[in-house]
Amino acid sequence: MMKQIGIVVHGGAGTDSEHIKKNIKEYEDGLREAIEEGYKILERGGKAVDAVEAAVRKLEDNPLFNSGRGSAVNNKGEVEMDASIMDGKTLKAGAVCMVKNVKNPVTLARYIMDHTSHVLLSDHGALEFAKDQDLELEPDSYFVTEHQYDLFLEERDKDDVEELMKKRVHGTVGAVAADKDGNVAAATSSGGTTNALAGRIGDSCIIGAGTFANNNTCAISSTGDGEFIINGVIAHSIADVMEYKGYDIQRACDYVIHEKNKNTEGDIGVIGICPSGKIGISFNSERMHRAWKSTDLPLQVKIYK
Ligand code: ASP
Image (cartoon, rainbow, N blue to C red; front, side, top):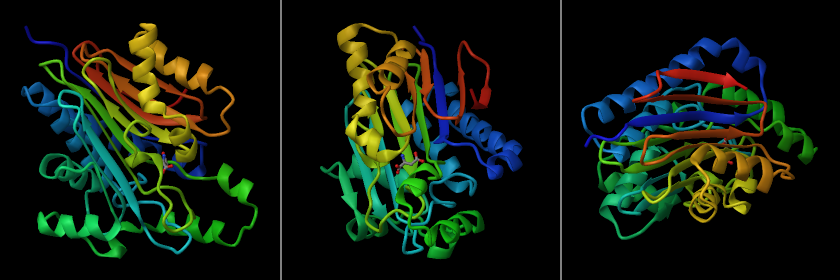
């Protein structure tokens, strides 16, 4: 019997900004296009892992989101990107960190998952592998948008680290999906955080923190302050809560964000889906760009609570 299909995407959780308010329609359009891209794969009977990769690629190509083109700029004025993908059926995962010039880091993560025996490749090794696989490359200038560079310049001379942490811009992207065979998958892609020290690696490439998928429970993609997401092992915790406490996906997401991590000082947002197609969304920040569609639910796009 055909199971329910569904997909959820996010475009980052964090504080509101004038830039978001000014571009709200474009953000909503971007989220909608990502859902449509992934959903049409699921509708045709395609795999969850293909749907999440396609949805994330769409968002990576959109300069409004902090991934691929439009990535945050580090304290050297450079873009270093993290991404990961996990297949809930095979429990295989691929991830990449600190990579430059690769147009779609999520596809590089997918290649690592499918064509190597490793999970995570970094920096120049990741770039070399991308070249070997003939993945699309772009010059440095492609990735840096005016908006992200302005943010970098604004923040560059501030020495109040706490203030900087509070103002970090989150526009990381992610997707989770369930296909007709009851398989789930998750993918996440990020340019990291504005003005981070060069070499900083966030949660988006960390399996169990930024991304996790297991057909026994759920698929999760996280966004927010990576340091807190890594320390809280957020994505895997949600799967654990489902497995050990028997909570449904929404309750498990809420429990991990609002109870288990209620004293966190970071912004944390998650999207999740189960093999049954049920979805869960939870965040502790002012806003999380998000959209979803499933057999049961029409396409919906939301930014605020
Ligand atoms: N989680 C990402 C990171 O810390 C940032 C974000 O979600 O916007 O690298």
